[in-house]
Length: 94
Image (tube, rainbow, N blue to C red; front, side, top):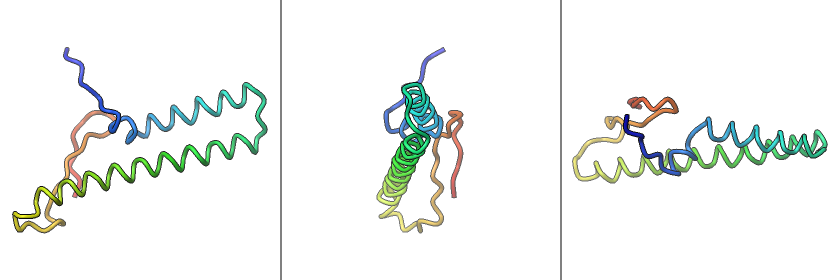
């Protein structure tokens, strides 16, 4: 079975990656005696960066599709964007 290459862009867009990162960092903070308030602040910062990364990558995908269809006369709401979800299956987004 051939392994699929996973780009960093796909990793940063993965909810699983951000959940893992958040869990690991908060676990380490707890292990080293950080206060509840500190752990809450760390969680908020990592969650914010995760949301920002996913949003930027999604917008880049939309911009790419828009640029590819610019000369075709096709309206953006008619374009279907295909992406791979966290489970690796290709899905269509309208």
